[in-house]
Amino acid sequence: MEVSKKLLNSVPGCVDDVLHGLTSCSPGLRVLQGHRVVLREDLDRVKGQVALLSGGGSGHEPAHAGYVGQGMLTGVIAGPVFTSPPVGSIVAAIRTVAQAGAAGVLLLVKNYTGDRLNFGLALERARREGLEVEMVVIADDCAFFSLRKAGRRGLCGIILIHKIAGALAEEGKGLQEIASFVKTVAAGIGTLGVSLSPCSVPGSGPTFTLGSDEIELGLGIHGEAGVQRYKMMSCDEVVKIMIDHMTDPTSKSRVEVQSGDSIILIVNNLGGLSCLELQVVASSAVRFLEGRGLRIERAMTGSFMTALEMSGVSITLMKTSSEILQLFDKETSAPAWPRVSRNPVSGRTRTFPCAPESPQPKESNPDVVSVQVYSRVLGYVCSSLLSLEEELNDLDRAAGDGDCGSTHARAAHAIQDWISSGQIPSHPSRFLAALSHVLLEKMGGTSGAVRKSIHCCKRWIFGPKRSNTYSFFNACGYVSLVGHPLF
Image 1 (cartoon, helix red, strand yellow):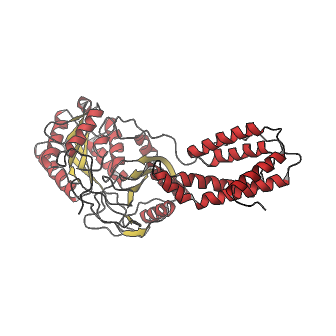
Image 2: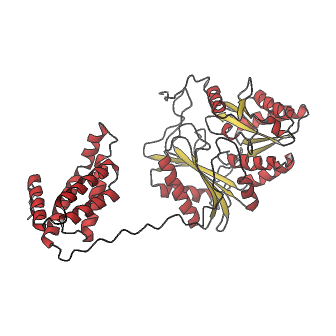
Image 3: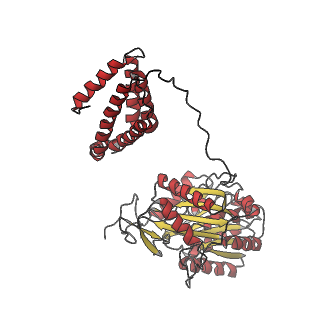
């Protein structure tokens, strides 16, 4: 199997490079010497507060180290790519924050066998040393209708627990109180992912195969098998399938939301999805959720819990309340946490009314013949452009971005709509002004701006005093040049 390309220095050292890259660019973070552990630089501020530790295998960046900072995690233990961190490093992190004066340590762990075992063993060792440690396991996967022995997998929902627990710790809440509260919050979180392509561990080939016309629903963040494959479909259709699956009343792993509930929404890039596609997914998700009567209080879009370069997206829903929102809105210095508006997403106007255009003077005696000529000439030009769309795109790919044909096809469709509207003026100056306006508004690209400029120059040359007869013969001359008869 062919090894996938990765921009690394070495496979064995890539995790160390990741942590050094993060701490080099984030002055508030440090690496614990001898371990793959990232800690807050200001550990003295943790004295008397509960310390929060999380982590797991690498390859999910910015999770989890990107969520270390005031108001979120105290530290993170990173394992090799897609591999749980060693017990020794977890214990070292617990000791370090305990010696800094933490009033107990809470481990926040995704529900994966390796993570549960290693963090659990570290917890037992720390307790034998007399340290006060608790662990909460987060399981938010909504993929499987019947629960497996291992339970639901831990996915993107854990970052919401990082945020809520971090706010509680900053308020000085006790270890047991924080653990109990986040368990309750976690029960109201659900996540489901869909993949368009596989991912690949550094030094290896793809973790699974997926047809070029296929998508997979419900896969894990390490490439674990999902629940169903579909043929490629529209974004609206994919999002509807995802949310219907997450909330299916017959599913044992569903997220319990119903009309009238308030929620927090995360649209998470699994690593390789373009920002353009991600915002299309966000639009579909907001529209579909609001259509079901849910009130979206906060929304986040971006890369929060990835699976290396997997092209895909996950949707996370969390039931919320005024108390949870207050904690969610608390400030944090964690470098990967986005600036989230404190205003509700639902119930607000999302558009500005467009200022009306200045009314154009109507022609008193329009020349019907000229309008017919314009329409025929433009109709022929539009048909030619549409037939040459792919050929022009192919030519443009040699030196550009390959959209020349598509740009001109967009202009052709806009002009055809304009012709059908019956709004074509007969005077050449007004005709060219109107044509340039259509191109500028609908065509886009460099071509649109260039053609707008050309038509403006022609409008000035013809001038308002040029006769319609001149326009008629000018159009006839053009058509004779392209070899297309008018009559």
